[in-house]
Structures are given as structure tokens and as C-alpha cells.
Amino acid sequence: MRLTFDPFRLLLICLAGWLNQQQQDAIDYLEEENRILREQLSGKRLRFSDDQRRRLAVRAKRLGWRMLHELTTIVTPATLLAWHRRLIARKYDGSRRLL
Image 1 (tube, rainbow, N blue to C red):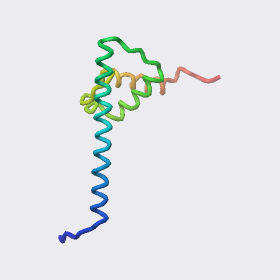
Image 2: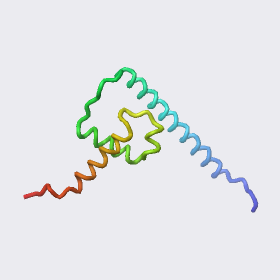
Image 3: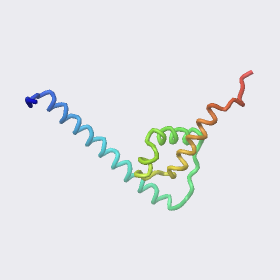
Image 4: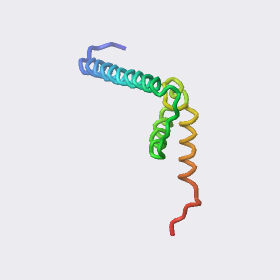
């Protein structure tokens, strides 16, 4: 196999690396911001609306259990995934009927 110099491929690799670094910087900032906000809460319990629970649960499910454990989250990963299970159960619950 012969290696050839492809400027387009090199440009694509550089662009992908730069975008990845930008995304990682944004994630690092948001994680630090979450840590600071948790310090300010100092053990106080947060109250979430149903809409807020739904939004967090949907995003948490996309990340998965392993990734949630690596992040600093407002609520525990088990709580986030339990919210998601309840949302799915409510979605497929046949007890609500339209008249």
C-alpha cells in the first residue's frame, strides 16, 4: 500500500481535531460551572418541574449509564434513568383514553 499526500484529507483531519477540541473545552467549562453551582447549593434539595425532568431524562438516556457516572450531574444517574423509565411507562400506558 502506497501512502500519498492528500491535502484535502489533511485539512479534514485538522478541522475534525479542532472541532473536537472546541467541544471538549465547552464540556469542561460546563462541568466546572455545574461543580460551582452544586457548591452553592450546599446540600439543598432542588425541585424540578415535569418538563425539566423530561428534558433531563431524555438527554441522560442518550448518554447512558457509564457516561453519566463520569459526569458531575445535578441528580444521581439512577434518578435520571428512573425518570426516563417512568416517562416511557407513561407513554405506553393504555389507561388514558380520549373520548
